[in-house]
Length: 403
Image (cartoon, rainbow, N blue to C red):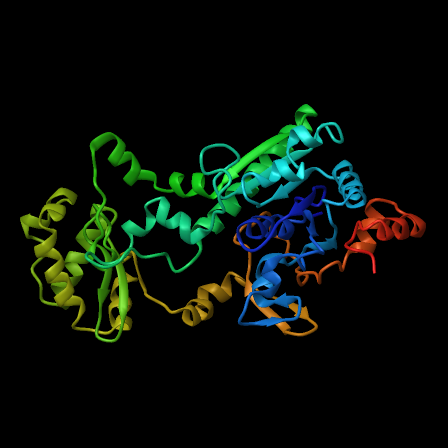
């Protein structure tokens, strides 16, 4: 058995953040039952361009492999009855909706405890279910601005800059997945469930980490740095070579000694014995002078030539790859970081694997479900409904307006 094969999650999830969190649980064996609203065509991620076909897209495939789908209108009395039966048969209810929506839909612990006292209600929202922004929609781009990330990113003097990836969404999904697992563990131990009130805002502020601590305790004012330089470790940034860019970092004094010795031998600098650069503090105080020398040195050779010397010396470094190069990197291949699923329209879909590794058994992967593809399994196998019961629910609008 895979680690989470005995965990069932009813998920009212959509787009990126929520599905990104639960896809890792699904890869670990958890049964993720996506409840999709038939009135809106289900998860909006199904329709994200440019690679979209009908009610499916490569965006949707990215976040929903190994899951199941049922179309269910939880706002209709008949649909609510089915949802409550799913709550009885599950360990957690997982959602990523606006902060005031869990109460409106009745998916908090106080709403569901009478149905299943051990249910864990994990809500990932933009701003949480409390506070002055609770009823505001929260999106990664907005949160990167609010939490100070965009002011920290980019070149000095340039405009506020967003990360190239939706890191608040993805980090929030992982935070929610951790909380859900902790909640399920506690519920199994104690027999009592709970709410897990997670938010993208909390995640984004929490990830300010040491710059926030420096500011709160020492009055530190973060500034943007040239060439993405580390705010305190010098050197640790990107450098331009003859044909591209590379990252070189000296997070320990031994790395600086190795780099200085190498550069003195290859680029003709005189760094190793220079007292201005002897320690972390010295290099930070004389950063302008040192970085100018390093930039001149690295510009004299190609990226490959530098890496051929830097890597054997054990100096932290790497090329600045584009996406294609990153996916084709020999280490990506060796670690099995691209997985494949078969799809009726897109053919073989290749996508990044989950980085979560538990044990050594290979992880099987199944394409993302078509909307309502698993209705038969959910209604008959999970809930034990017979055909008469399903027909009555259908007529009552449980699965959308009756034909």
